[in-house]
Amino acid sequence: MIKIGVLKNKIQTKLINYFLRNIPSYYYERCAKKIDISTDIPVFSALAKSIISEGRTYLREDRLYTLFQCISRLPSNAVAIEIGVFRGGGSKFMAHLLQERGAGMLYVCDTFSGHADVDSSIDGGHRVNEGFSNVIVEDVKDYLKQYGNVRFIVGDIVKTSQQIQDKEINLIHLDMDVYPPTKFALEYFWTRIPVGGIIVGDDYGTSSCKGIKKAVDDFVAKTRDCFSIHLITGQVVIVKTGA
Image 1 (tube, rainbow, N blue to C red):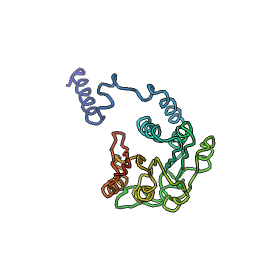
Image 2: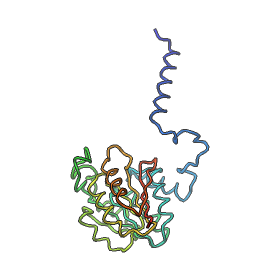
Image 3: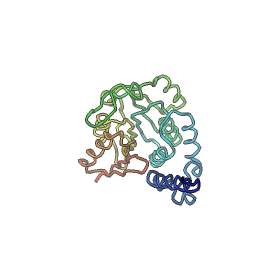
Image 4: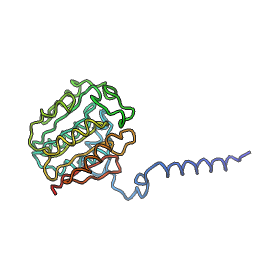
């Protein structure tokens, strides 16, 4: 019979080993010495906490902080786009920051009825008109009505992109999960992004969204005037260099 103390030690050892294998070290190694973005950056922390508490986005502090840093570096008259809106939590976060910086415009783009197109050879379990389809666009519009700098573009971005008339797009947040619309958005909007402009791709490092990684990798490989950085948040940041 195994003594209780021995069994307890074995369970503790297994839990510790599991933790070390599966939890990235940045969550625990020297945490006491790290800046806590959820509390220590007032301009960001309060807004992020409020947005997350409303339950309308899957983005948490880490990924919101990426967007916060990017928006903080934009000019006051910047134009931004979010493609893949869901229930509008990320859009509200972006709209609020842009409005605080001046007359920044945010285009909020989504079918609001699920994926319009997928590539079954790349996108795995994603299906047309499935996932993120239980969203009422009028509800999202009501949620964002306090922001006069928001414009809605409803429908498949491949078909609606021409409704975005601004000559320059400073920041694009791509959160579509699948290959075809991500590939299109990268190629269509790139010529309208100025030097220093930024694209943030969500779920680049997510195994269930392989289409995002392929679309980004293929685009960066053939595009000379950019570089990309894969963040530990799972996001990818693409910066236009002009070189």
